[in-house]
Each structure stands twice: as structure tokens, then as C-alpha cells.
Length: 304
Image 1 (cartoon, rainbow, N blue to C red):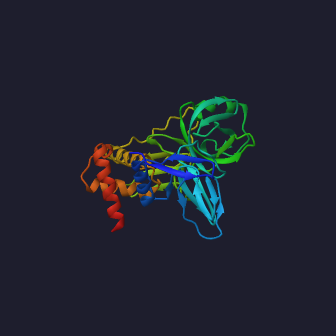
Image 2 (tube, rainbow, N blue to C red):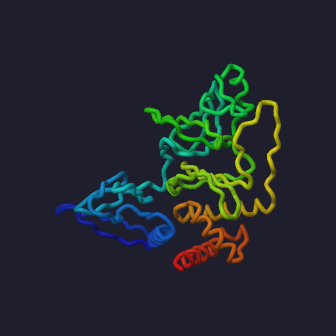
Image 3 (cartoon, helix red, strand yellow):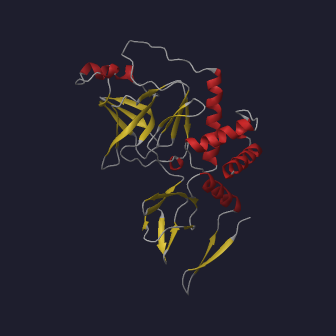
């Protein structure tokens, strides 16, 4: 049942605000236990003296109040709140995963869940074999043989344009086209910012944590270079055991996303391992009654 909260604004005006439901508050409490602190609008954020107010906050009478629901970000003394429900806001150096939506003259356009489509120029990517040379007209004609519409690729944000455009590059050998794996989409605000975006999880599954909320899971290490036009190299197929591990990881990530918990390797493996120890199959993990019990076990495990 909703609670009603009275807030005096001045002597002549009184505003009545409907508070968040108990269930919403419980979800926030769960998320703060397993990751960064999550808040709803109106919550007080605990800060140290000399703090600097950032986006999504309001300073009043020495207190810092959240003006949006989201995850509290702290960088030195700067305190801000990243909204949980919003489009991805890119920063230079971010690792992103995108799907190609258009191939045009000397560029690819990608959907990275931002307000605008990102652009990957032909000159901003490695040619097959890592060859370093000037791009030619023949390279433009062969663009679809390298990356075509619908392909998934990993890349890095190189530049942010004044009009909000996003320029990507894949010059490092760790970036490129992704295949034989599973894409999981979550809220970008829940992805923990960390230096290591390419990881091998303890269950021997390779993971790429895109800052834009796209997570790539694969049994084999993602291919690090493009194939030459006309050359057909077979990609190793994912084994049945690998698919089952990927499926359990994917469902563990979806639970964290639904409960608005911070997503990184540690929290994912906490849910993954606990579900295994409970004898749950990959598919039982997502059942409503099982999910509540599973999260309770994860909390107890972390407390001990």
C-alpha cells in the first residue's frame, strides 16, 4: 500500500507527495547490499564534509538529496546520481558493443543504445591481417565483406562531436566483430565502471562488459581480427556444456538487472555459484519464487 508523505514548502502552500511503495524500497535495499548504493528521488545521500554536488542531486541545508532514481556515483568528492532508466551517455575511452544498422560510403553506423547512432569510419579500423596502409576505393567496395548489417562488433569511443555524434575506432586487436556467443542487454547505469572490460570468468566463459549496457558472453575468446574478403575461416562452435554455462550466466545477469543491482563479474558469479549450489537448472533461476530465495542465499553468503 502506498504511503502519503506531507512536505511543507512554505506558509501558504503544502505539497503532498506520494512516496515509493514498500516493494520499491525493498528492491533498492537489495541493490545497495550487493553493489553500489541505489536511491530513489527524495532520498538523502550520505556524504562527507566538503562534498561537491553532481548531476541528479540537490544540496539543501547541508544535506545532499537525490532528484532522480538511480545509482550513486562517487569520484573523489564529486557525488552524482546516474538514472537507472535512460539512454547511454558515452564518454571518451568507453568500450561499447554495437549492432551495425547501416553501411554507407567509407563508414558503418551502429546502434549502441545512445541518443544517436555511433559512426565507425573505415580509416578508424584495422584491415584484415593488421595491415597498415592508406584505404583505397577497393576497400570501400569490400566493406560489406568485412562487416555487414546486423553484425555485432566491439569498439572504443574515440571522439564525441559537438552535435552529440559518437566516433568509434577498432584499431586495437582486441576489438572487432563478435560471433558464436550471447548478447545480454541491461541498464547501462548498472554496469560498474572498471578498467578491465574484457574478462575470463571463473566458469571459463569470456565476457565483454560494454559501458553501454551490452554484455557479450562466449566460450571462445572473441576473434581479434577480420577475415580477408573471400576467405572463409570456420569459427569454432560453442559446446553444449558451454551453452549451458552461458545460459546460466545470462539468467544471472537478468536477475541483477531486474532487481537494479550493480553488474560486474563478482555479483554475476555470486548469483551463478549460488544457483549451482542450490541445485537449480539454468531455466529455474528466473522463476519468481526461486529468484527471491536465490537472492536471499546470495546475501547470506556474502555476510558470512
